[in-house]
Length: 467
Image (cartoon, rainbow, N blue to C red; front, side):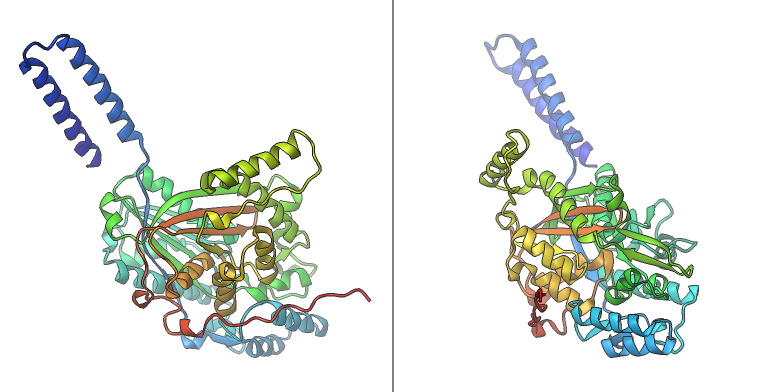
């Protein structure tokens, strides 16, 4: 429709020029003017039809589980003791990890894991995911007023739970989505898949103008729990929690007036060619043939190195000219002149007003804050999301954006940086432009009933000393 509209405008202009050529007295070279006009119109039309259409975030929703899923640290330890799979040494380790994790006293886990004994069936795992995704989609459809039949693209990501029929099939069945929908189910992509799914949806929307894309992100706790005693695999049990998100993206030009954000950039970096990077987050069997996800001691270094590679590509897209020049000079000194100096970390606070960095854990957030030289205020959305909801995997960046909105921080013209790390190893980015000021009172989100209680003060970890 947009292309036909552009064509009608260009044809009208060309007709006006042609008419003027014949009716203006004394005008010379009429033929040349008409030919030149045709060529100019053809070039302009080619530019218009090949220009990527803008992608907008109409709205999004983060699922908040019911009170039946509310769980304290003491309850988690009690259930672990009742099941009896942990050795005494690892029970103490889990207790220590929970104390230092950055998670608050109350988070959410599926009812199946709170049951005595825990319910670990496929039906329970499917029930968990359906509860999360259906809840998020119901809230999103209510917010946007979009009818399910208008959705032309569906992207669902869940790393470790992939039943048949797929999760995208489950959404199509539940909401009776149309038969020609472009449906995709992403698996095994780790915690960065939420941002990756946005990038994927963007390319689909640009290939199919005037469409809506529904992007869903979650992780399944029941299927990802580890029931063994390998210390490197127990961290997942301690950090990951129940949650999920739904986002409605649009390539309709008319949606700009009501959308919250415009997608400016997406960027994906994959360092999996390196063996250490590839294996630093790895699903495998332990010595007792129990399946879990092991986290390597190299994880923090891998994340640091991946970030360096990532910002080398991101910087030119978002940084002001002054920072680009500083970064370029430093790069030339290190790579060309072989000067032994530290690599320059650009001041990304000049490019973004809000930072939504994946809640990989307290140590990850500490490292990112140090590497990017951010203030506590910039890290607050990530730290408070980790504190209240835990690591919800690929959906965490949406809980963080919801926090920024609920606090009334997002103003018209602000830029938001969503960044997430994931197995593979990947570092992915989405950059959003706020099209309007988001009023805190108008926000209906997972934070709505308790945002006044935040931020909370988190005591720093004790400093290690060498005796």
